[in-house]
Length: 332
Image 1 (cartoon, rainbow, N blue to C red):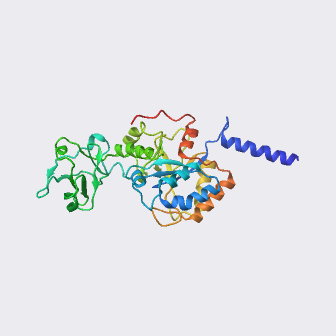
Image 2: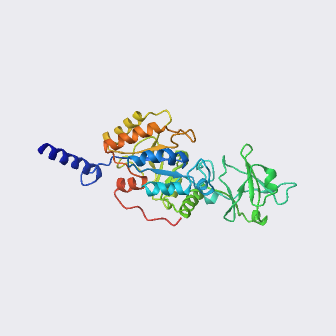
């Protein structure tokens, strides 16, 4: 009886050390799944649910709104949320801040000119590598596959990335003169993605940077829009040297074995008492970037459950890591 009592007391002390109290450990683990791929619901969710492990999924807002069989739908996301998962924004269209205008001030298209032989059709040089979309007076224009279709479709555009030129037919040609034709900026990506997700029933307060790419300027802009931001870095997070709007993640690659990831978790969470955030994508099929096998996820989840490793969503982990309430919501 004394031995049983001692074991129970020891277990209680260890649990208290993980969970909180004056001697609380910072160590914890978060699993994130980028892009909102359908395989996350089909394969990852059942595995993690079996072991009682929550996760955070980064959703590309337009793909959820428009619907695509390769990605989760609203009903599937709701199922995840009911099981304790967190829905985060992963951008409006999944662009990098260096590939499109940074902010609203850089959005207006310049030097627009009429296209010969095209009634109400315009073209303009575009100074960025990618185009997240065009807006006219705040309304998004429709992207088409070629210039010919644009000529026949008011409220549309086509971007030729090889020559860096965009052809568009506005709803009102007068809008070209007053600067109402604008290229979607990264600032708009962050703000509108949050609005789209909220409108679908998912009030995201976490932002996961597309392609794990982040800049100090975007970090500063994000403070009024999100409670926390997660980027890349392939490192853990440790007290005194982690930015709430630049939380680091370690990317899990297809070739990584479950044991390799377990050893990483041990090193960061147990040995260094840090917060490790894993960046995964699809699970159990070959759709998406760097998919991981269901067998690997099952082995990792089983080890997590057996070890008693604290697992949290990004929102939960941020509140615990910084030991305070979430910042006041911005008006952005």
